[in-house]
Length: 388
Image (cartoon, rainbow, N blue to C red; front, side):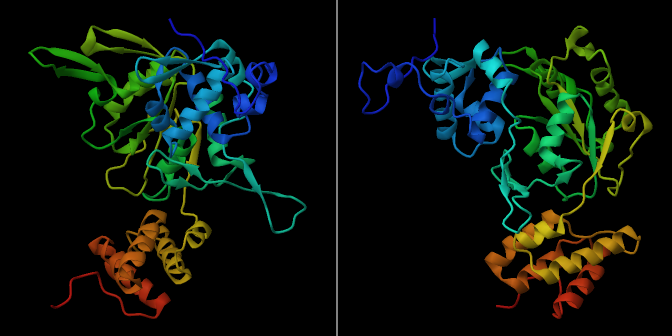
């Protein structure tokens, strides 16, 4: 049997001092002021029946350091908000006191920084939010707040969101930043019902076992399911989501003896839509199930802040205007512009410009090279090897 980890004496404190050994201050014991602590506590509160390893929690919340997560967990255990299991791995489960305390925590969104440009202490931009791949997402304005925290509020109210826009504008990055630990189904024309519900897999020694899919896992664990490129998935396959999204929140799995699955609190579906991608079809049945349709475009100011040269940004803006007017079939977005910066830093400016032209689809390459040449004053061709 395991019990919450007892408070540890502070270094150098007398052993007979209760304040030093048994009653840590709220700040020291809980780390309430820490953004990472909030994410850890809220993640455990979302999974009250699970005993989780430090690494599992680190990956789920997209934290850069398992050591920092472990320290936050030990603080929770010291405060009686989590039970520390050693079997032999360090694993943690939230206590009822922890669940109650988590209910008083603000959303796990980084604190905003004060603006340095006047305005009498006007609230500045939030700090970047880590994604599961350790890259940072820079929050953007949405409604009365910032996209990451507003998406979290919409989840709390069970208001489904459909982000849409060209590939590379940051739709997936925004959702990953808002919902650490989310599950993802990457939609294609070949996606089938089993990709959502699960299927029978062979096991060593012969035979098969049924492995539940991400939709079932998200419903049972109260997690977020991102259906990326949802409009590439055949409508008859997408229909598997609809019973989970209505008021009942119940699905059945025909392939597993008509097993019934009931969604628990916290379950939420987000779907991504790329209108310009060949084969993408937004059906009325899908569109009507998402209350908020959120247009996501490239943030040109952010591109400049992240090191993309002004001339390249201006060329991309012109190309996007031509794309909207039907004058070209492709234009670079934030993903391609950040890739440009990486290539420039490794191969130089000339190679980076040539590569940006080279990654354009063949039927848009002349438009891209013309725009880049016009804004940089440099003749540009697609990247290629030179002579020996």
